Length: 535
Image (cartoon, rainbow, N blue to C red; front, top):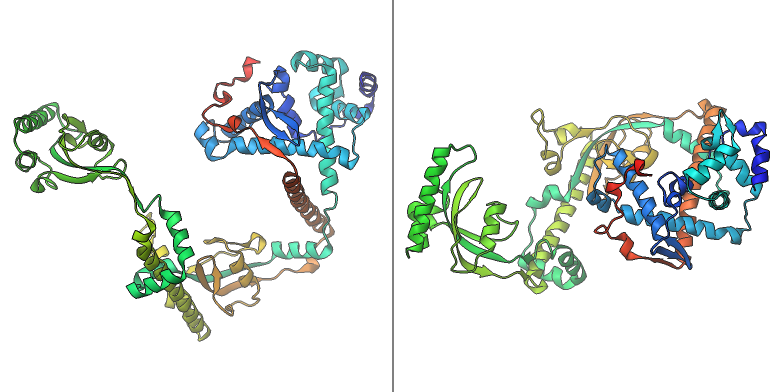
């Protein structure tokens, strides 16, 4: 292999840059990588058809991705952010995919010759001096800079080149027909703008109701739907946390209070606590001495306090849940002032069973169905009025919000909106977002002023619209250069689709075992402490 490299060193072709060195190689063998440090892996990260993805390779790949994400976000990227992004899972998935790709080489009869490896390395800018491959510099960088033998380095490079060949073979069938190019041209050069109104069940939720009889009938016929809704909401709606009912004596002392005012407030709360400890009824002390006007009349009763579910703040909640019925707290202070609490009743955590809330859920689902039906009915009526010559802006006037204020009425009241011109590509509609059915209905019309044959149902919303403008594509203006660009873009898209399907099929038919311990975010790879200058 070294003979081939020396030969290439004298070739004038080395001045050309080999522009497609595989990224995974850089991740695996760049400065600071596990290959660079030549560590012995303590364990494995995944088994792919019996072959290993080592824990050290995973740790390095994850560190690289973490640093990339941190750089993209201006250095503000934490382990919690990584957890939210599933960064470890995605990193391991990428390494597994690399291994799957490499394993396909034998099945496809692919190999990489010494000459191909030599040519690729020689054309890599990192091994060139003054625009030419420098063998001595290459040897020093690999052995001293990367800390690897030439053979090991070149074997790793060969493996990545082989992966590239396998991927190229997998996506080689991508092609784009002339009709597809024309369709892409039309999608880029056609546009439309509409006036529209959206109508959904949420807007009519207060205009419908469900009787007990309707709920009972619904429950009998839709047991599965009710069970599904219960399962979705049991943790958030039907689980009552443990709580303690308390009374309070409160003496206000806001953060901006003077030292004298705070001293006076503390003296008052100490006097109240002294009376309670002397045996006076807590509720009577609260009525007489508490200065919280909202609760003193009822003896300082705050009701049941559960962690994170009261309006009184974290400090008071934490003091309350420390108490058992009959106990009195010591004096404590929060942002509102000084307090003393007495616990009166403990309520254990409880999950409401399905039978207890079945009718409630059934009523809600009946109301939801009625509200959706009303939205559709209103949409059909609006479309009929459009056909009769009415204007959407007169049927559903737009409500003007104050400058700088969020207009929540747009979500609760049907009102007309206008879009800027948009294209059919991707099914995106300005002001709405991804709405492929609506976009398709818009571009099925050809003349300004046209309306659809029926309201368009997109998700849980009905849309009624009128075409404001419509620009058509002129295929006679499609140049050979633009046709080539569209064809190349289409091929790239199809290659991506082919690759995705191919790699998914490889995963499905392979035996992949992931080591769950390496995916834990509680025991990381020390990426936050990584310093490039350490190496």
